[in-house]
Each structure stands twice: as structure tokens, then as C-alpha cells.
Length: 388
Image 1 (spheres, rainbow, N blue to C red):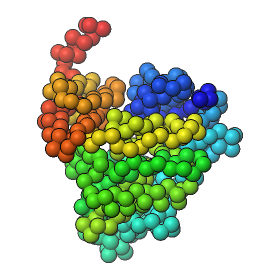
Image 2 (image 1 turned 180 degrees about the vertical axis):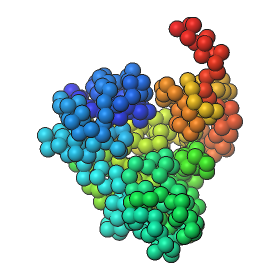
Image 3 (image 1 turned 45 degrees about the vertical axis):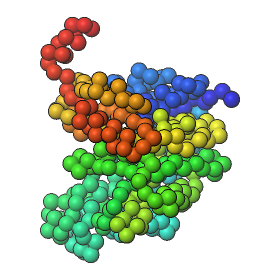
Image 4 (image 1 turned 30 degrees about the horizontal axis):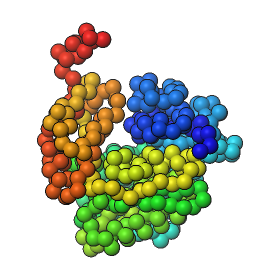
């Protein structure tokens, strides 16, 4: 194996932390830029610099000696990514892909232009235009830029809802009749070869509008799983650039598959692959960055991933109930090293493996009942301070 290049990551959150945890098995050198001095990557990166990854000059200075430039979050300086590519650096995702993904309107139009099935939609500039598209209602209104983890999305049931809707450039998307929400991860190498993971079934928290837990493989017939993989490959082939792509899609009650959106990076829907697959999503991404052969994406076991989301307010995080789940076979806790918890913030996840669906059901139930992240109580904080 050739000497690994210097890899720059823009963004130092939990995705970067898990990427580095895998990279440490090799000789990869990972440098991270993030504005938060206590970001999850701060203690594990080969080099960590505090700075704004949305600022062009900051990114260019930071990545001056990089061989590879990658992202941990989409909201980075596109202009810097384009300049770094011109300098001959390997930039993944390609700036042309990132330009589309950063704007939900461009992304939806991309699907339409390439014949990729997606929910009917309209691009609007202001909320007063909703009335002209009443035929799409009920719908979801999505801000074109900046939204993530359920932020920037709101339901529009009737034209009257426009009075309190987001104002500015948005996507108005007809609400699909959803049976299941699925995701397929596809790793695409520079030479065009691809490997696709089995579709996962995502169950969303209705209040937080983010993934509560997922199951792998999804509980769908094999012909639907095969169709979902083909559809995900159509998306990655349309983009035509190397990278790791998480293609989220709806399976409607009429058994139609519709692409919802794509993330050109490691994704919450692929965390189970760390334990459930020979080559995890983070391992595949490292292989793509280093131009190494792609890994084995086959599932070795049924799996579930349960998000650990902050509850009970803001403060120093404390994991509750670890003892109640760690005795379970094939159970793995991942904490993201975030220094502050708050309601709805992803603080970690639990992965469970089982040979049976019943085993998965039981593990999900036990984890959801017993395991959570809360703010550390005042007495505990005082004791921790004294110990330190």
C-alpha cells in the first residue's frame, strides 16, 4: 500500500470523528478545520485548526499542503473547493456535485432533468407563490439552502398556511403517500466502479423530524431492495463523480420508489456499517479519498442503529442506562464526544446485531427504554470538577 496522502476534512463533527477512528487503522493523516475548539474531532485529528470552513481564504490557507480535500458537512465554501480542484488536489465530493447538493432546488431539478423519479415539486421565490401551486397540496415546504436534520422543513396543508410559511427561495414538494423511508449508500471510485450497501429502513421521530432508528436490511421484498439499489446507482451515475453517496428515498403505498434527497458524504443511515459490514461507510470513503480498491459492502448480520438524542435541556452530557444495554450480545455504544447536550441534538448512537428480526425488535425496545443522554446534574458536575 502506497503512503497515504494528507487528507483535509472541512468540518469536525461526529462524522469526521468516526472517519478518523477508521483511518487510524491505516497510516492516513487527517487534518480538520472547524470553528468549535471543542468539536468531536479536536482530540483525534492529526492536526486540528479552529476556523470557518465557509470562508474561502481560511479554507485555502488550511488546505494548502493537502493532497485530498473532503467534507463532513455540506455548508462549506464552494469557491474554495473549486480553487483547490484547479490546484490539482483531489476534491471529494467534486465541486460540481456539491453545488447541486447545497441547493435543494437545484437538486430536485437535477432529478427531473435526468429522469430520476421524485415527488412533484415547484420552485418558489416567496411564500405568496404557494397559492399558484395549490394542486401540490398537501405538501412540504423546504428552504433551498441551510436546512438539515429536519430544520428548514415545514408542512403546508392548505393555501392559508402560506401566511406563516418560510419566506424566500424554497421547494414546495407534494406530500407522498409513504409506506417506508429507505436509504441506500453507494461508494463510487474514481474509475467508475461502485459498490452499494443493502437498503436500510429509517424510522423518524415525528417531533424532531430526524431518524429515531434504522434497520438493516430494510423489511422489504427482494425485488424492491434490488430496485432501490438500481435507483441509487442511477443517481450516482448521473452525478458521475467519485464519492460516497447516501440516497434517501420514499417507498410509496403504491410500491413506487421516489428519490427524496442525496448526501455526498458519510451519513446517519450508514452508521450500522461499522459493525455490520466488513468495510464501513467510513472505510469506503477513506478508500475513495486514497484511490484504493473499494471494500466489501455485504451485510454480515441483521442490524439496527438507534440514535442517542439529547433530552432534558442543556448541559454537560451524561449517558444514562449504559449498564442496561451493554450486557446484551453484539451491542455497541458510540458517543460522539460533544461537550454539550441539548434537546434534539445527536449525541451518539447504539448499534445492535442479531440473527433474527425478533432479536432486533427486542434490542431496539430495550435501548429506547433504558438508554438516553441528559445534562449532568449539578452535584455530579461539582464532583467531576473536584476530581479534575
